[in-house]
Image (cartoon, rainbow, N blue to C red):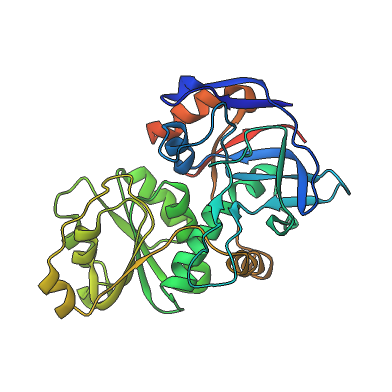
Length: 327
């Protein structure tokens, strides 16, 4: 099959379009003929060697296509072998595209419980863009943060896939959403998706500026942090509020004022990906409330995966970057 093959760890040039062995059918697994795959920042970390992937390797966690056995249209759940405990993944858990071939290819093989029917009305690009960011955001906001109608949410770093999905999902739940971003254009785009407003994180005093937008200027019920800025995030949350952390793009270490933290009665919640039960909850919301996936920033052919990675890393787009593999 044709695939974007990671020949060595490093920059985007290490992704080369070429041949890779077809996945073989095996009991307990389903082979999917992919129509589209979506990029995630996690894929960049795989490309850089952060997860010790085997080489040569096909990255990619997100995908949508048709089952080879019966032709039905499906989404690929990228969270493999979560286990029976809904509180946290089990010891066998892994993300598709880390240690086994992923979705930057014409075909992918996944465990049987990692394919679900594609929601009606979604294009292939939209369907491919939904699983990882949708699952991750649903677990972060609904399962972990317990966000409810009428509560307030601040989303950090509007423009990325998770942040964009968070605006869509939280607005559908009935929460009031504000965002931070690097540009007025991205804040305006978030408002078009359901946010009320936002502030620029280029302002060193952005936590105070964001807090001033919160109900009674007391801080937000929930702050969603997909970038790793814990300490500033705590400046924007109300006493007794929750900060949900699911990324470390900006920083992998954080210094916290411990005394302020416990006097503030804060919850600091870690999360990533989600379980099949979380995914089922997400799909129900999509089908029952008409929630759409994040907007598509740009679509590249599979043969231009390296260029797609460069575009993702540039931060220029708003929404998801997708690979067209062919329907």
